[in-house]
Image (cartoon, rainbow, N blue to C red):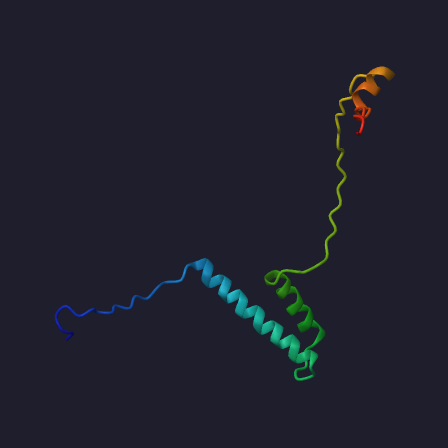
Length: 105
């Protein structure tokens, strides 16, 4: 019996959620299937074409396919341009010409 005031460690068994246990089971199955295919590829295990096809189908349900996907889209852009009023030649020269330089002494 532990001494008075001593911390008592109580281990609780945690029940994994159904989702977590299903994901874990799928990963284990996928790992086993991949290992069998690797052993077959290395000549360590002989698999029939039917077995290879079955493993391929099961892996597609568990492991994401890394297929290349092109997404193309066209979108129309509209731009609004505000055109300033047209200036006469005198107004333009007055607005954009350089100021007269002062005489250098």
